[in-house]
Length: 148
Image (cartoon, rainbow, N blue to C red):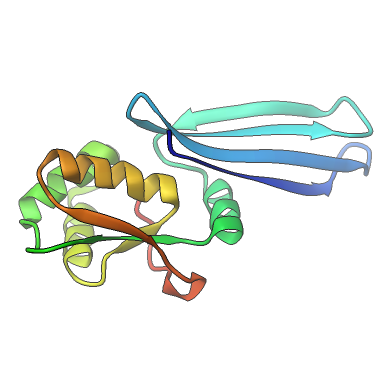
């Protein structure tokens, strides 16, 4: 199982106490998912959010700040653009074709960056299409555009 999480604290908007958010992104049955569990230490304010597909940007940014980005890049012969575009559209169904094309070109060059779960999710789709890829840690300065 591939998972990443972070705990973030902030001031509760209801009572001024300490609000804790447990933020996570994970793979479940081949689907990239995210969740947020919120609770206040001083009042009953709290809740749960979860979903799949496009990750809310604040979830993504919290994970990137805590764990840093990873890079997905091909190993060996560059993959065909059409194969990469199909894998991208499978991994991220809402991705417009023109964005998939641009990301396929980027993968063939410096590689794609994102959260560990995003890149492992895409790596799995590429490997299923016989594309050899590697996922590796990357410093915060290496961030490029959003994939998911």
